[in-house]
Amino acid sequence: MVLKAAGRARVARSTARRLWGRLIDRIAFHEWDEGAVLMVFGGVIGVAVGLGVVGFYRLVDLAYQGFAVIPMRRLGTFENAFYRPLLTAAGLWVAWALVRHSHIPDGQNVPDVQLAVAKRGGDVPVRPVAVRTVASAVTLGSGGSAGSEGPVAVLGAALGSVLGKLFRFPTRNLKILVGCGAAAGISGAFNAPFAGAFFALEEVLGTFSVGAFSPVVIASVLGSVTARAFLGDESVVRVPAYDAVESWALVLLYPLLGIACGAVGAFYSRVYFQSARWFSQLPGPTWLRPVVGGALVGALALTASGLLAGDGHLHIPMDQLARLSWYFLLFVTLVKIIMTAVTLGAGGSGGVFTPTLLVGATLGTGLGLLLQLALPNVAVNPVAFGLVGMAGLVSGANRAPITAIFMVFEITDDYGLVLPLMIVSVLAYAVSRKLTPHGLYDGWLAARNETLAHGADRALMERILVAQALDREAVTVLPEATLAEVVAATGRARQMDLPVVDEGRVLLGVIHYPDLRAALMDRGELAGVLVAADLAEPIEAAQPEQTLRDALRTMNARAYDAIPVVTTAGGDSYVGMISRADLLAAYERELLEEV
Image (tube, rainbow, N blue to C red; front, side):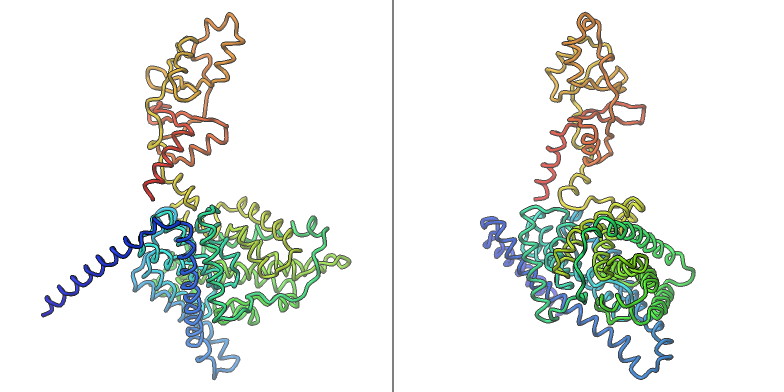
């Protein structure tokens, strides 16, 4: 009976798959306008992800009730202070145990989605994301310092990926649907549709192409509208009234804030990754790591007079921050960085974008208050500094300057802040890159030996090797070739530059066309005695194991149209030439294979 039931189930599944395949073939998306189809599916994804954001926050509320409200209801002030770190430790242990016992791989964060877009064709598996989403809700609800944007963006990306695979979208469109889901998640969490769209385009897809822009924007708008219908229109940042930004402050004071945001962003990145290494080396059983980390996070939260002990939802009370002392705010900045690093390094789950906003707000407001004391005769506005500081930290730590500018502008709706936002974001980005090679997102990838230039176009360039694109039959000349022989070889060559290679296949240099032309016109009687070795110039070469992006970078830096390819196994042994045309042809071949 059991075998017969199993057989009937297999037949039913096979029939269902066959009928679904016929349905998809009948719909035949390829006969519709591709852009219209993507926009329709972008809208569907936006609504679905908006509902997912609501569900995620309900899970956070449930965890908050279980780990904070109910246990603390009958405790006095002293008992509350004593038990809160223990409850946070319990919450981080539960989140860690959920992930560990589900046997899911490392990841399910924004960098992992970048990796899926760049190297996995947009494939974001659902089960690991679902487990990580629940673990993130427990982490946030129990008092852990993490962000909600990571879980909802990844949840949205997974929903977009599932829908795209279900309807058999080609790879290039599947990636766009993943971006739609991420955009809807961010916009739903922050009520910021423009910021959600630009986050997906800048960080997830890495492209602002017309084909991706429209469906991503539609998904972002509908994600925000759907989430707000259930969660309300309250902004995550309570912005009090503040004076307009004076023009002289743009030149003298905001650059100081940009430099400070870049330096703190670099410090934030270093502490974050060092915390993960420290906890991985902690002696004792692995279950002890989240317990120790959670207790430390809960204890640190008590030092901030309730400012860092929230309910799992992001609230940045700018009106309250402006009434605190500058040194306390800078202390809170440091504490929040440590809490976030410890939470995620010890085994908790969640994002890093949301804590970065709070760090930027406290840093900017604290520096504004300090400048107010240092310059008593100058009208310095701490609230404006705090708002712009949020964008500066996101730009410096997360390496997302465009998203940072749009998010704070959407929150404030103040055109007077646009120039400060641009100045501080650009400076913070430049300073942070100077101080540390990786931010919070690309650092996670670098730790796993992934050096993505995320986005579809650049990802292809990173994946194709020079060995797959070079011309091994390119015309060469011997060092002793006469000028006439060089000219004749030029006529047979595909590229304008001729490599000079000796009989042992060692590259001696390259003859550039302008030098050859000058030899023919200006050398007079010497033209008859010149040989190829006299005209050869040293040139920076590529190697077969390098990527097309490396080769293109070399060409662009020296304005070359083609460069030789050598292997250093036996000296500069010549292999072939690679030109811009070869590079483009290899790129197009790979692109067609992905369609």
